[in-house]
Length: 405
Image (cartoon, rainbow, N blue to C red; front, side):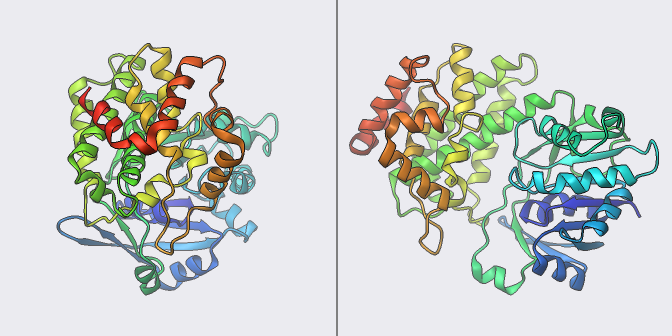
C-alpha cells in the first residue's frame, strides 16, 4: 500500500485530501500537533466525513493513522519513507513543519524524488515553501530535481461544525459534495498519482487566481453584503435568499471574471466562467451545509489584504482598465463586518481590525491592511472613502444602484 504523509489533520485535511487518497487505496498518515485528535485517529483508525446536501451521505475514511508533530524523529522517518507528501496547515503553520520535512528529505534514498501537494490557500505557495526549505537543506541539495512543489486550488467548502456535533465525535467532519482537487500538472517529479478527484492543470496560476477572484471573492461578498443587510443573518443561504443580494453577488463575481479573462487570454471562456459562477452560488445556497456568514467573512486583516480575494482583483482591474465598482463596494462593506460566532464572539483579529479602524482611521487601514497607496491610487481612494462615509445610512440605496448596472 502506498503512503501519503499529510501534515494537518484539520477539516480540509480530513474531509478532502485524506478522503481522496484513502479512497484510492493509500494509507494516510496524519501529522498534527493536536494530541487529542492524533490519539483518536490511532484509536479508531477511521473517521466519518458527513456529506451535507439534499441527500446526506456518510463516507468512512479508512487506512489512517497519526503521528504527533512534536515526535520529531518519527515525523522525519514518515517523510523519508513517504510515497507522496501533502500539507494542509495554513500559512501560519508552514514555518513549523518545514524543518522536519527538510530533515526527512535528507534521509530519503539517493535520487528518490518526493512530490509535496500544497493544499494551502496561499498565493505562490510553491515559491514560499521552496525558499523555506532551502534554509534547512545543504546548498548543493538538488531541490529542483528531487522535490515537486505542487500548488493547488482548494474549492471544497467545509463549514464550522456546531459544538454539539464536535463533542459527539471529534474526528467527524461536515463537507459539501464537491470533491475536485485542482493541482499543478507541471510540478510533479514523479508520475501523477492515480487518485479519483485529482484534476491536474497546465496553467496553474490561472486556476489559483480563478479560485481567488471568483470563488473567494463571491464568498466574501456574500458575507459582507449579507451582514450589512441584516446583522441577524447567520447563514449564507439566508443572505442569498434576498434577490437584491444574490443579484449583486453574481454581478460582482462576473465583474471579476472579466478581469480573469483579460489576465489569462484563452484560458477560460465567458460561458465557462458564467456557468462556474452560477454553480458556485448554488453551492453557497446549500442549506444542508449550514455555512455561516461569520466563517466566510471573518479574518478581515487577511481577507481584505493586498494579496487576497478582493484587493488583488481590484488592483488587476485597475491595471487592465476594467470596471471595478462592484468589487470596490464589496471591499468597503468588509470594513463594516462585525459578525460573531455561535458563542457571540468576534474573531480576535477582527476585533483588532475594528480597533485599528476606530483609532487610526480609514486612511491608515487602506494603506496598512489593503496595501493601497493613497497618493498613487488617489481616484480609487476617493471613491472608497465616499462609499465608506455613506454606506451605513445609504446602504440599501447604494446596493440598488450597483445592482442595476
